[in-house]
Length: 330
Image 1 (cartoon, one colour):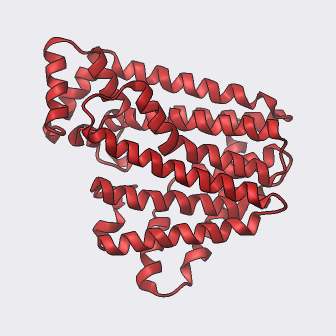
Image 2 (cartoon, one colour):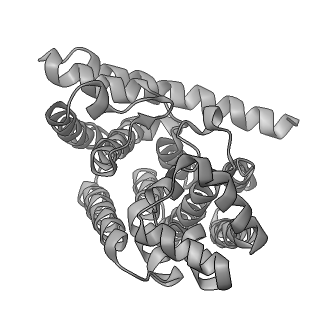
């Protein structure tokens, strides 16, 4: 790690410690424990805190301070975890970040209610960082939530849709994953009193890096180390989930490979002992490299949008974040 990377990593850890303190205080002393202990469990499970970091970075990049956006950073992390709790129930997921999912550790009713409480506490914390443009901040935050729900609905719809195109997949990802990152950048820039050009540029960064991040997540499903990834490797293949990889593979494959993939979709997944077989199939027909190309394309679009920022160090911080996400690719 070079000097600049060390400096940025130090700032990242220092500032997110403040957000983590607020997160813990937001839930640790509330009652009843039957509601807030499960809510605290999901927050305690950690994560890279990419979303609050985007809020803080965006506030700083337009002339504000990191500390102006601590509570907003807490709010988006609470919102993010609210969506994860509900997604895990809908997907019947057993593990999240290497730990039991909330509905498995407790039960579905507890998980649903704890998730709802995370959303309510998110709005409570967001209010603490709102200034004269609170209407715009709350509008962006709510729009992000609406689009996440729309994206999740599309994702579930695609489970039974016979054919899904790459364009349809990208639109689903733009809503389910990228809309929240876009919202993080937007509300951060508003809290920092950024200009409309700055708000638009940072929103574009969030949207495009979000699409890149989701395609990368699809790629890691078959290429990552399970202990580092925190989820079962090949889980998307075992569920027959229409990821970028599967959709692209269906459009490229011919002959026996095409039949294999169509059977995977028809049977709604494969057995765990066939994951390596399909990883090799993906590699042979060029899908893994295709995914890497798309990740680089959307990351490039994200980086071009931040040229509007005034200070070189702020631009470098966003570049560092984007590159750190790319380096996760195995």
